[in-house]
Structures are given as structure tokens and as C-alpha cells.
Length: 233
Image (cartoon, rainbow, N blue to C red; front, side):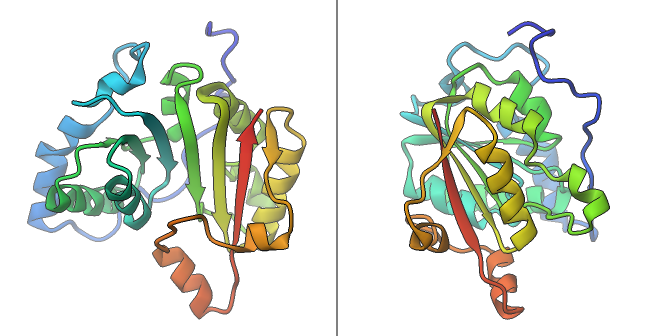
């Protein structure tokens, strides 16, 4: 895809904190020594076959945007060792925690990116990813901030470009306005089809779902969650 054909980045930026409380010594060391080994290098052109990022030949490619505490990403990586995962998380503390889990488990099928996910999406080859997970993203609950939500027409265009035909976009949230927002945007996009056949489909967690800290917090506060799956046509 030429530069002229790629989505415009004029109105986009990462919103949110980059760092929280001070890192422990081990975490800081991991960021200095381990992250460079696992980080996707966007300074060079993407390989035609994105599986070249790994020391083995993945049979599937899966991207998780904003992995937070990393519970879901590390669970899926262990559950599906034949799949290559790329996890994106700009928040330094979350990245440091996930790298510690990678080191502890010895997972070999995870690569990482610690900045704006849209930059990675624009770098990835066309039709190179089997699944994109966006789980409990920042809901930006105030209406004046809804434009900051990651689900947007321009980002769905990005998803459509990098997903293989038949690939999946999986979204989870406990915020009703964001669930409705996502249904509206995906419903208006010609590349995506909602797979639900009845209410049970979108109220039931994804197969093999390990739960996340955000889901647990929602339950404690009395909110249910929705689990939406869209197929790339």
C-alpha cells in the first residue's frame, strides 16, 4: 500500500499515562535487556511474511492491543504455542509486568510493541493477521472524549487491511456506551460482520477466556460485560 493509500494519522495520538509508580529493579532491568529482544522493530520494512519475527514458523498470527496486566496475552500464548502473538501496550508498568511473565513462563511466541498501536498497524503487511483482540480498552466515558476511543472508522480500516479474509476482531467491554459504539461502527463498516446469532453469543465470554483484572473490577462494581466477535469479510 502506498503512503497515499494508508489511513491519515492527522487526528490520532496516544491518550493516557505512559508510566505509573516506580518500577522495581528487576522490572527496570527487563525493560533494558529483554524488551529490545522481543520488540517489533518498525525502523525497518515489515517482512513479507510476518512469521519471520519468530524463531519458529507460527501457523496463526494474533494481535492484542492494550494488553494491560497481560493476563489474557500470556494465557493465550501458553494455550496456543503454535500461534505467533504481538502484544501492544504503551503503559510502561504493564509492559514491565508482562515481560516478567514471559521470562517466568519461557514463552517463545510473543513479540511486543510499546507505543501507539496505529503505527504498528500501518507497518504490518496487508492480510497478515488472523485475529485482533481489543479487550476492555479505555472507554473514555465522557461524550466529549468519545473521539479518543480506539474503535473508529479509520482504525477499522486499519484492521480490515491487516486481517486476513475470514479473520476475527474480538472486542470486550463492560461499558454499555462503548459496546453500542463498537456495534454501530462495525455495523457501518463494509469489511466486518457481527457473528452473534442471539444474546447468549455476546454475553458469553470467548472460548478459553481466562478473565482479566478489568472484568473482575466490573463484576465487583456490578457491571456485566459484552464479548463481541466480528469477522472480516
